Image (cartoon, rainbow, N blue to C red; front, side, top):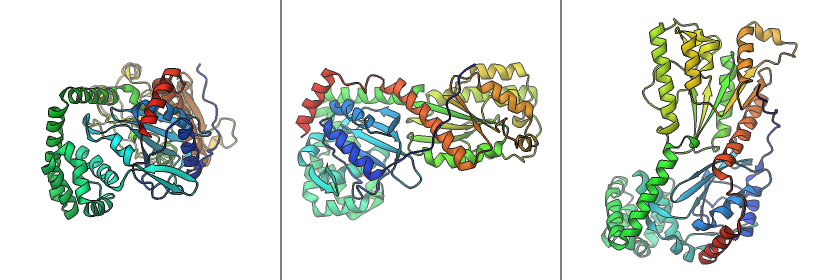
Length: 472
């Protein structure tokens, strides 16, 4: 029998302004001057960008991670490292209404597919100090900020974020010559002039038409000026992308079990907004034997009063179950672009415990085989009434005692599981489920991705100090 997770306590969230003060203090203690690329206008009280983008030198990343980890009450629950950025997902801070998590991005290369479109050292050299109440940090020059805000979406995704366009347009209009001069070394005079003038005009269609031109110009000029460094940068970029997109370590799966579908659905509905920044992608899934031919999540829609449907035949049920198994393994490896947290409404144990609910008409040995071959979720959460409560009989009138005991016996064999009292008020139930999920995510992130990175070493400190002196 495996030991269940201990019942979690209620949330204690750090206000955003207090978090920022603690974060900046920790970064400076680690030799890193906070340089915020954009969305700093509301500091320290308001986070207008959702996440926070820091510009650092690459050697300073270990110190940055240790600085974040040292803040009391804050836990790192997700981490993704690409060729140009490390995304850190935190829990324990309220940055937007209703949220309990926050994403920090530490960038050291402003590049597209390994080819820099703006040298970071130029940004550091022209960065200007800014004060907001008790906070002191640095921000890029207006032209550099406008270029980063524009190209982060335009050169990557082929579209410009409307949120940043008015400010970028104003900056380019006031500093047209400077903007062209900054872009010219990477894109050439012609492409840089066309891009700046198109932004000033505000023509969205022409702006999107510049995408191919600036990509081509950046690639050609990079290859001609620095062929070896460019090829090495492109290769390293794709190596990191493959590691992110195809590694199963970047997928965390949480499964809710129970015979009351309504309680599960209500809990997940309340839980999803709380987990919004706990990973880059947070998706909800409904376990179903109906075939799906895309990797898109499906929402849980079943209710306790759903009318039973006709079971599939044996061959059809086995085929659908096999298709689901293949789909799950594909989702582990190829159907993701970033760190992904998947919340499942039920899972394969339902085939054994409640086959009628999933219209499974196949043999039980095949359902057991599917379970043995399926990816193991990172946490099982069983929602069931407390057997010691006096109102248990009220629940047993709508739920099968056999099924409840079967679910309870199953989760007790799992490595990581927790049983929560379905009698609790929905807010208390959601808080307990959220705390259990965060606890597991923090442990997995530490063991899989950050183990060893949070312990200071002499060589890494020397390298980081040297790099930060250069950036200063």
